[in-house]
Image (tube, rainbow, N blue to C red; front, side):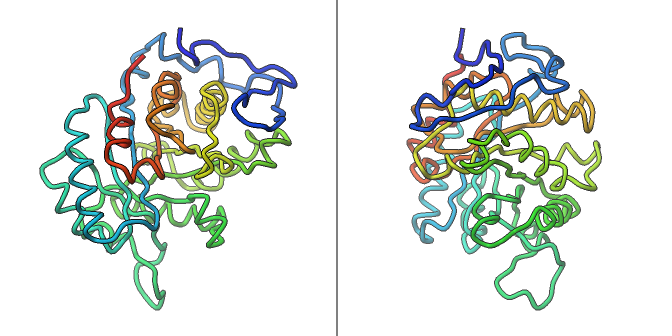
Length: 299
């Protein structure tokens, strides 16, 4: 049995054994949890979800490095089966990276967008610009956009709706701060970010939404939620979709984990029933590391 094959919520249980933190958790099983399939149970809906491994290059690489990395990632992705792959690259490199990926299976993503069509918005890029250069995905609500650039949940929602209206797929990022995890607010934070970020998104539109759960305390810190902790939150997120959309939507939505994912922990994370891939930061800048993540060992 894998690390995520069995788990329960227990009061006062410190589940992040890899951290020097004492963390508290909400007690009880969220509504809808009983309806969630396990990977080992392997229901038809579970089998239909194709994991997505997406690299977020953030503000890294120059042109030559971006093109070389894209070619190397494409070669690694060609070895993988049963997994979708994408790279979200700095906007100046969208076109050359698209060209470098030509003929392969790796999708192209932008890291952010603006919700207006055009106008006096210096430094911003529109979804029509992103679509015109051949992108498939756009990130929305990444914690660095929220914390550094001040994106509110309302801003994120406007971006999500614009991404979908532009015929692109949105990767909606959600996740709690360290103090929110410690105070037992993780589920509440995720519920608020989902409710506000997906306002106006109906069930039919959900086919173009990917959720990326990224605990903010784990992004770029080297700290990673244990598989049990990640699975606990992913299962809650899926149960949120049962309550707020339907079992069908919940079974179909891809929920990635993000936060210091690397080639050493990816296998255990991907063994969890409700983890459907990863949004990878630093490790996606090294073709061999990201290639190992893309070609994770299925347990």
